[in-house]
Length: 224
Image (tube, rainbow, N blue to C red; front, top):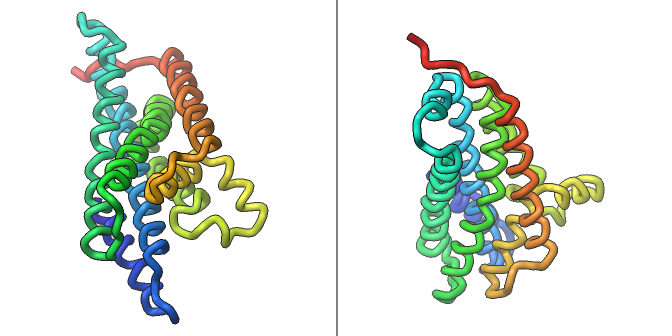
């Protein structure tokens, strides 16, 4: 929560020192990008813990109890979704009270709602990483994947400033479309159809891959 909130203030203040200062639109765009950044990190960090549960034998222990496996997965998804809310709200409050972003009440609600629903993409990606990676690799992978999604998805630098090749890469990443949906919501518009289609496609794709990996993964028993 603190890093994207601090980045919101930092980037806004950096541009405030340039001729003409930072415009309200730029301040809002920075805030939306940092909200997306915080939510991506929270979603990945919350769900990749599956690798630790698998290594400790906890998942195997659950499998021999009466608890349905669908309930186990549902709880993991619910935790991931819930933990994306705090960074969204904290960065929104930072934008409102520290960087001067002014939106109508409905636009604030729409912005947080759109980004919260869109974070399901990164919860699904986190589940995939959690099942696919070993315990020792999972933590580092979350940092690397989160950085790549933020840097190449235009969360740190606007995609318009990218060379044409990198712009094409950005358009293939869920983080780019996630931010695009947020920018539209902040402007009081519906998310672009392309963003909705892309995010809607990524969720089942990541979820299906996670299910395939989960079926092929052996579950070690609890030590001792």
